[in-house]
Length: 446
Image (cartoon, rainbow, N blue to C red; front, side, top):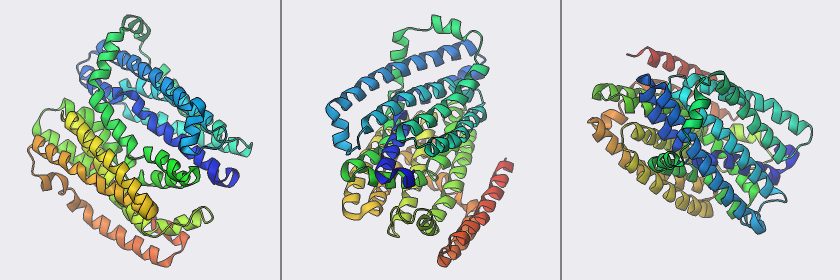
């Protein structure tokens, strides 16, 4: 994309991709609330009540999408968005159409929450993976044929929608259409939005302190710099989003299980998985990412060495924050979590802005990581809720992971001193093997 389009048009694609992620805030907290509500209903065999809950959630989401579309049209009036974000010609159209397609994709994701809450999260994740595998060649064909950001982005989102719809139709209960006709009250949908508001705030905070920064960089320095930031942000998400995926299931499970010892065990298992993935990833980003970046994108941008430890710290803090937020949902601490998340997001935006002004990308990521310390307040509340000492709950899992982390660090450090891309790539195989071995050991644990 960078080679064919240039830095500015790639920056537009990056903004469109960040919009794709950012529009997750459109769900109004409906997705998280729906998952928490569905789990106990399905466990008790109340399938019809679960379907009705899902339908109310879908209707609430559609209401939010309608308001969002009106706001988007207002922002596009008189080229306001183009002026603020320094977009190239046609940039507003790309963002608007991407937003509409994203809303359709999110509706399909929300509809699959019934399967996720019923213990079939692997099927939902598999559909998402199939969409990505379909999108890769589809986007490649678009580029080969000379398509621009609009066509390429549209092809990507459509490819993500198709597997979701196929999975949905294969598992659609026969009574669903009948229930849809009976369960269409606007009042129930609005009630869902009200109850989901604290969840909504946590989502806004997450997007604001991550992909919202892409738009901030575009407003400050233009789409080309936003494109560089977008790549770095996605690298940091290998630590935050990918690592904290395991904590998503704890939202419903912690809400359903009321036994203290079992809750502590579930929390500790989830947190150990987050630490396993995020800490190995942080070592790789810090030690060998500079060599691989210069090999991968030699003509795109030369980054100072301090960007990489700052990026690793920013990503790890994001994983901790998401783990804390997801656990708070299951423990009934969502209101305090929403306050902490919003505070963290505001501080992240302010400190990232100041950091970028005075220290470029390194200052931005260090500033964002510093704001993440606010998460500590909610972490203390979680320990009190579980009646477990802070150090035992949050730091005890490190003990069994430490030998593997030390070995990974030594191997990656040795590879970084060689400054040879192929050596760095081969060096990744040993930490990868260590992670797989530790995953196997953790899976055997009682």
